[in-house]
Length: 418
Image (cartoon, rainbow, N blue to C red; front, side, top):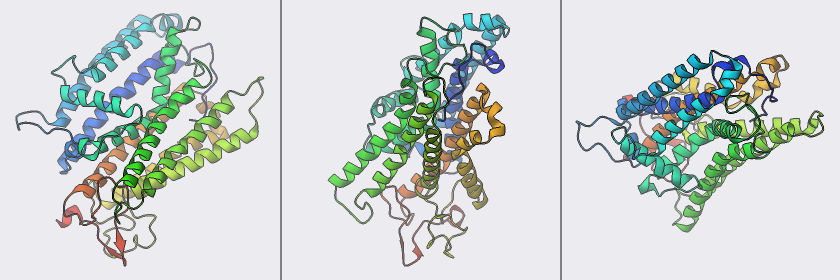
């Protein structure tokens, strides 16, 4: 979110081979494969993801599993992508003029890709139910809506959280379309002009996913306030704290835009840069804390509970499904590092790399990878909260740590203790 390189008239080597529309398409297809792997692994360890998101189960054991249907969809999308990219390479030969002239081809593939994913009536034999559910969920959350628990609330939250990691990808999709339809310029395959359409449109597109999640948090807060308050639900403060987390993304976007849009050809005021650093630090560290303590219900930041002898490993929890304790520590460290990828551009000797289009693509991929890993542990946590007899007594509508009273941990058992 930290300001993109200035637009140059010449195409860089990376864009000659992998233009912006294809990069957007690649990450979207990659997301389908990643979701299939999420479903597959969680299925293997006994976590029923469809039941958590209130998705209908298979009517018979003869029907393909949910992850197999997702793999089939991803295979079709990947095959079409590979064909479209190969045709583009054959006809352009990395020639800048030809790359600009054939900008309609990657956009045509993007249209086919989005058509297959969103418009479920087409290709009814290709994961029809899943694509129908995706369309209805996207329609609901596009304005920050949130289903009731019985109707798939957790699925709405999961998809909206994923969209926050795709904020820059969505902005690049807008940029590619804007460059294609404007009268001047080199088209969708030219060097990305991230000021296309005005100085505020791209920042607004990037802010939209966080705004969606913020509104969902406020909806949850209002539901708690309207309902009967219990010791488990509290007064709803955890939802306001969660909303604050998404709100911290806005200063990062605003100060980034102010730096990029400074007028007069002069460097932006230094206090913009300082404010942007502070905003990045607050957003990254707060989000990291929330991942560990709230989304994953780990006890690393709970000084009273993390040293309890009833815990199998320091700072974790009693019940671990995804893997051994060491894996959790690795993921915690990785999450902190990837939450702070903004720090890459704070190093002066990395300035040349930061001005390369490929570095932006790598940062986008790293964030998608972080979100993919996050899903395993977020779904595991939701499964523990909703599994009868897990011992923590949490309602599915809450984002709370397990209840600890008198240092007696009431959390569930480890999977290998069952």
